[in-house]
Image (cartoon, rainbow, N blue to C red; front, side, top):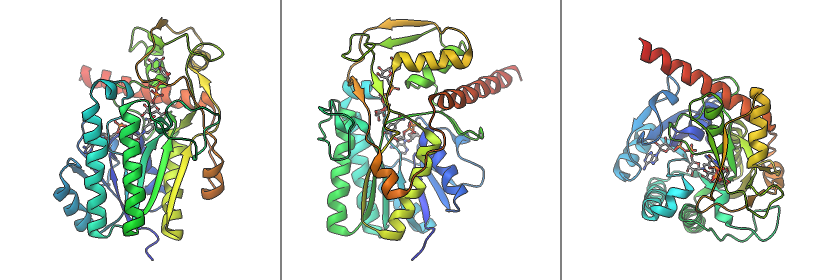
Length: 337
Ligand SMILES: NC(=O)c1ccc[n+]([C@@H]2O[C@H](COP(=O)([O-])OP(=O)(O)OC[C@H]3O[C@@H](n4cnc5c(N)ncnc54)[C@H](O)[C@@H]3O)[C@@H](O)[C@H]2O)c1
Ligand SMILES: O=c1ccn([C@@H]2O[C@H](COP(=O)(O)OP(=O)(O)O[C@H]3O[C@H](CO)[C@H](O)[C@H](O)[C@H]3O)[C@@H](O)[C@H]2O)c(=O)[nH]1
């Protein structure tokens, strides 16, 4: 048994994928990145890691890379990720997240790739009836993004049963923060994620931050989410891969800490870190947003022995802020030269 198979990371030039690449490298796995750079950027891929520029829709290109690098495992991050956009452009999401995942799964089965780890999402749960949300909670997505991911989960489950593919389905809750060592962060300029947008507003890179919806049935009227630090999430991927390599089978886990913060609480944490008020305005609800998503996160601890190391909201904010500040200074220096 190859304990450190070559890992093909689709979407490895993106936010979470680039942190997973670092975690895999730190753990001694050889890595290849496959990315079309639609939202990812070249510089997010560390020196020495091959970056193959291509689209996962091109299954022959993917197959060539799998053969060429003797890939033994896939971590599939590539996808379209904006919930509100998925409501406006559902077919883009079914194409990029569902259809392209189908092509990738078929290619893995055809070429005998043994392990497949998939970036799923809390959006598969829709508006849960009970909290906290465990992995057996009903999956009833309320937006095409969540639906497009759930369909991929089903394909993986069935492909595993029929073809013996080992699968790890990781349902991420809200991912935030940046590598504490400053090696990676969230680069997408048009990012829509709350903490990213808030630190950009804190640095004056955006005029203000809007609170989308203040009339939800939550204690302060704003949406509640379970935020997880991206480096803890990246470590969970390495543990999931080791689990599949060692034990085979299937893994379905929530990736979260099991506690929620409202939008207002997150903005307060940002204000505390920067030591002054943020420019905030209240805005209408955003399409496709469920009021609250908070996980039961026992399974990931029990099955993988996962020990989060960066769980405080302050650390998520601080690392995101440090990354944003550095990126802003670098682009200022580039413009000046
Ligand atoms: N960010 C979150 O809070 C969150 C939460 C749950 C799940 N996820 C999932 O995690 C994964 C990574 O998300 P992210 O936040 O890093 O997003 P991201 O946009 O930073 O990364 C996605 C990467 O995939 C690449 N890509 C997109 N379509 C591609 C294609 N057809 N072929 C090749 N490359 C392609 C992009 O260029 C980018 O580098 C996604 O699948 C997303 O659905 C993210
Ligand atoms: O400028 C902003 C940005 C966000 N929000 C609010 O903050 C909360 C979190 O929003 P994000 O955009 O940060 O994250 P989402 O919960 O919409 O979605 C994220 O987490 C989901 C799972 O929970 C999906 O997986 C998805 O890919 C990922 O973007 C939501 O209530 C949103 O309305 C604001 O009020 N203002």
